[in-house]
Amino acid sequence: MPKNNSSRSWIDIVTELVELFFKSSSRSKRGRTWHQHVVPYENAWAVRREGNKRITSKHRRQDTAINKAKRLARKYKADVIIHREDGSIRDRINYD
Image (cartoon, rainbow, N blue to C red):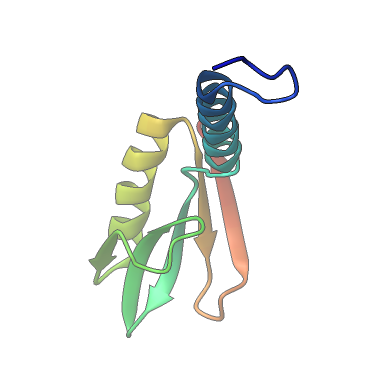
């Protein structure tokens, strides 16, 4: 069967799809951070990774939550953002 110049081979198509997949996956990872927020949660305190809805851990005292957030932030070279009871930001610690 003669090969038509205007048609692309299936290998070219698969290669292009794979390249598009890897480009899109690398873009989505770039926006993700490991910043840890210490936030009020159900009459206690919680550590929550930035962008997550779920909490990482729950603590009775704020200082315990801050220590947990600091350990995680050091591990991932991120920031700790400490919130007040009303949700406003009290402090930010950088471990970059």
